[in-house]
Length: 492
Image 1 (cartoon, one colour):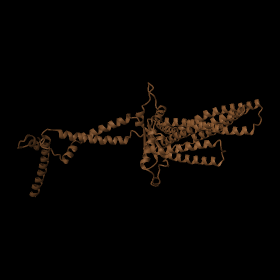
Image 2 (cartoon, rainbow, N blue to C red):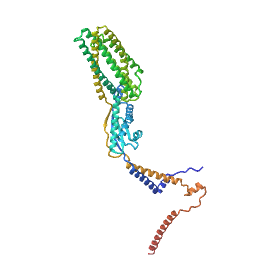
Image 3 (tube, rainbow, N blue to C red):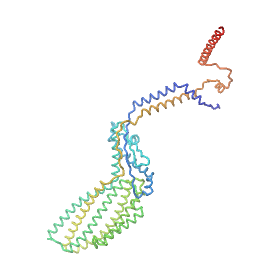
Image 4 (cartoon, helix red, strand yellow):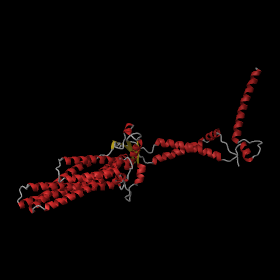
């Protein structure tokens, strides 16, 4: 085995100094290549905007978090969640079609490549600010793409938040139209019956009986509307969750609360044919129902915050709506069964009346119920429209998209500097490697190391010999001149 070769730093420095011309040529080549790249590279412009992701203060936020500035991990998680929503297909693909040109086959740039190469989201540390950057080859296109991206993101959040309200409003619009037709029809039947039978003012007993059964029928109709509205809302929420989120049946507390609410509603239904709305019994049961509903609302929010896979307020809201609608359906179904028993008894009582009064009671009941239901639906429809408009997300635009004045890529000065540094490095490596890999015998030590032979003498290189001769001649000429001066002075 050969001996280990020791490299002296001074030897490396000598190699570099000896090959400065070669290193300079390589560096120059790198700089020329970088310049050529800068000439052919298309400039890239970047537009930026700033969004504020407001932190929700709810049951999941403790006083300690509020006092210390909040939970950093939850803040980062919320930022990451919204950044992914912003870069989702439903948000980005419309931006691509609006700002990019299709190829000859009608294909637009791919979604994955566009997101990775064109969109950047950067959260500012310890703040609620998220910076959104979009780049393009034209400044105007970069700004437009950024504006459309932010708008699509906000629309997506709004759409997620308004899903339930939109479904409820659609159901109420359809049901209100039907109720109006039913009201017109019921009032027409009542007027025709009065005119045909010559009824101007009904008897007190018939009127009292009619009002009582009308109240029960109204309660049943309103309960049916609530049941159908809750089912429509639940279907919309489940569609957004995509099967995520457990049922309220998995939570013991909510299950017991909903069971207790159903019992109170059934008790209240039993009071309808006994007491008037302002009777102490009715007031007491209504207060109990309101207090229990408040407990259910708080517990639903807490359970939704625990079961949500992230700190996303939109997702938590959808889960809370899911649990609320499931509870309302369970209560409405139990209430419907009890109301059906009361209405069956009323139908039996109506059958015992004289024929003339039977017709009047039925017609009056239908007209009263139709009117009350129409008024109730119209009011709820207006409320649903207001709620849909008032629903807001927790994102605010701090700075709108900027119009870039200078390209961010390529950076000419930085590119040339890096090319020069890489050229110097490559040149040095080339020179040193070439010198170290050169196995020619150059010195007396090489003869001893590689051939293991003694050295008796060395013939200098021509250049070295010539330099030595020149120096000797110069020294000789200096010596001759000095001797001549001595002799001249000595003679005098």
